[in-house]
Length: 601
Image 1 (spheres, one colour):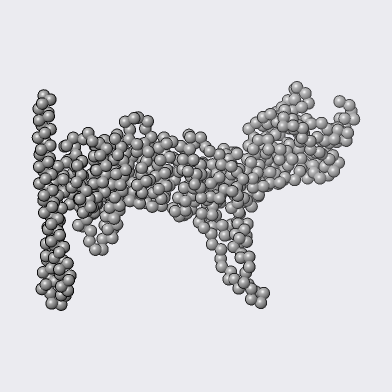
Image 2: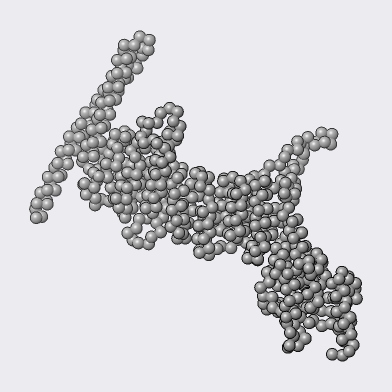
């Protein structure tokens, strides 16, 4: 190297050292710098003009496949790590020092900004890059020991400003996903989450003036009423829905979203509000939930990519664990949809049991179309619907109902026992639901008699105000399972209380050839008893009408009552004749069957 070049280098070094000692601006006036971008692989951030200073690059920073050709003194004046790495490099291969920074948080993008900062360029810190810059500054040891107002100090000052608004804090938290481990070590994630939780629990009014102004502008009417130039519209305080933060947090990854929800729950957020966010989040990222999101995603530029099946499984299990335990917080229909998705994704048994228990706790508000859960088995002997799943759900409801109330029979329900009345109403709704469910699945030829019976007997008889529903299910089952024996037919018919059949159902049952003879006789017998009771009641009313002085009816009404009694007597005689005829036909058919069996042998 020529002496002139050595002198130039010495002058430059002196100037750079003076720049470190708060003579930065003076040095830059003498040796101006320019930025040159060559390619993604080779990148020269600053190259001093050779004609003026004769100072070429003397250190190369390599981050992956990207190379930064820089100078030592601006770097060592700001970074403790670079000072140590450059000093430890003996430069045996030549004057150029090579430093590898493959583990720097934020990668190439963050280091490019830091390099500019080291060269005295004004750094633009935003809510999107402050986290990566803070982590990278910590990694490079850019403390105030290596220059006043170093990068760690500047990023900390800016972070305090970021935490004053909801939107900036959300941007900072989203950027944490790029440097997750480093941000966690520096407690940056917890600071962002705590700030968001406080704001969500308090509302946006006191924290985000930009949100306030935007809502204010939307609330202003286009043509306000004026009186002498003065608006007559009263200045009412703006109110916000409790779900104003749903859309923002829905773009977070699952780990960060989970921590945000837990922080909000610890901060006193209502369970209903928490549940609403969870419903929207799982609906957004699991296609099986029909993607009926309540968010208006049109205003957000980020596309929502579909996670893998494994990620969906993990997401669903985590969301189920976050759901509030209170009954009725989450809709029954949504819980059943969640259970269906869980079965398709093959979640853990504990997660599935959790969902079945939640559905069972509020089964009284379910619809029959919702609980018809398709069977996930591929065996030809499997039923179309998952009967075992509904059986477990029903068992959960019955166990919870018996534990929550001491009411064993409806006769215990008296005036003033509101809890007992509600319990009876709930179990009655479930009984109707079970009967409707059995009617829908009864036509399945693969439905075993034992499973049909187990579902029917799970609900006590007092919970059924009438037996029309269970009779309809039994009739459909007998029609689809013609191979049942007479004993099995009688056994399945014991599931209904014949005395609770309506007149229409009794009339149908009396003519139903699929029912056993014994059951038909019982139906006709109880119908006859019912007619006798009705006739006795009519006679009682008629006598009271004839003997009453103050409440005497007209002669026409009395004649009408007596005619009705005669009609009932005729119906009773017809029913007796039908009983005798049916018994005679059944005996003849039984004798014929015995003779055929005898001839076969």
